[in-house]
Length: 232
Image (spheres, rainbow, N blue to C red):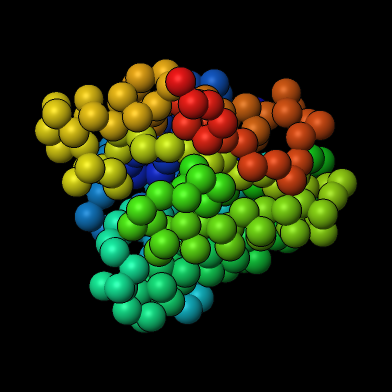
């Protein structure tokens, strides 16, 4: 049984992961924004939190934290010419700075674990260029750099890995998947001819949090239906 914190556990991948970890008997602490509709059932503690706040309060956590997962993100797809510089700053604050603040605030508790694991999220668009993805690819590219730097700095005590999905059927991608036609079109772009499910990414994150992945750190794992490496 492990103590695991999921930042952004109210929906999508965070919610799916929480369900899986709770079912496996872990103590799961989740944070959510105030508009969440997810039930708090099964959580050891389910706490409102705004990652953009100046000071993050994690006093509700135990002294030993075995896992930290940072799920908040955004997918704003626009032509580069229509994106203001301040849009890049805002996206960077959510995707990268929020993760940095969360990790720094939890670091003493993570260091108390015999073997802790941090899981972050990127996107297939960092390593595979797509039209209109400059905003998200820039921020998530920083997340991938952070992953490798922290994995080196925190070894051997704390493992740090990152998951880079392609489009996944979550509220975050709602505007891109809000019709059957859009879902089918996006599915056909992938070698596996389907889009990702929250459970798919949850299972991978759960593996990275577990002792089964105890020899894996500093990696960006692509869970993208083959999009980043295959042409079929």
